[in-house]
Amino acid sequence: MTDKLLRKPLVAGNWKMNTDRHEAASLAKGVVDSIGRQYKADIVLCPPFVWLHEVGMVLRDSNVSLGAQNFHWEDKGAFTGEISGPMLKSVGCKYAIIGHSERRQLFGETDATVNKKLKKALDIGLYPIVCLGETLAERESNKTGEIVSNQFRGAFEGVNDFQNITIAYEPVWAIGTGRNATPGQAQEVHRLLRQMLKDKTREFDKIRILYGGSVKPENAGELCVQADIDGFLVGGASLKAIDFAAIVNAALRKCQGIRHF
Ligand code: PGA
Image (cartoon, rainbow, N blue to C red):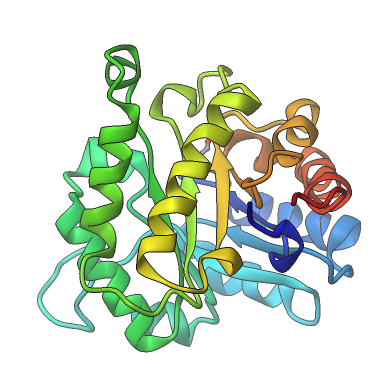
């Protein structure tokens, strides 16, 4: 058994390709006003690239960190339309999501590109949130364990320092569908990931594994009491400050509410 109290909950909001300039600033302000002053959880907002600076200004002096949804593994050069890790750092990003299933499914991201991005993030001091998860067809053919293990091995190949890494398990069939994994289904995969971490590092107990996929204020609590769920990566519900704050509060109450020995 792992000691959940070693891990501070983390809740990240992935705004995806949503919000205009005004909405981005006011959503960030709403989050800061409702939960931006507590220090018991790490809170991250990942707006579209074009609003990073503006949202960063709103988050200044709060306990909410800035994160990006993606980046390129090279530092600079002829990569039209891409954004680099150092650019994210210079605009104030602390975190970056890597390998989100929409990047994998719609933009050709592979375990190999996830691995390159992860190594770059670690190199330059960006805190990566590495996403993995199976599709519905894979789950229905009982391949969840195999798929997630392969993604894990591909993403973390050659990586030894896990200190700044967060993992997000996001079953593809639960993303944006309103359908979420049951707490038991989620915990089963989180436990598998914890075991894989154990083979990689003695610090396996300190690494946060988030759940993502239709997380809402109503289901956050029951998910977060699971032994290996340490917070959430939230899409749709992060677009309303009140819902996002309620999810953070559920994580604060439940994620560390019980000791698991
Ligand atoms: P969702 O998205 O909460 O809207 O399902 C989660 C995600 O894509 O990270």
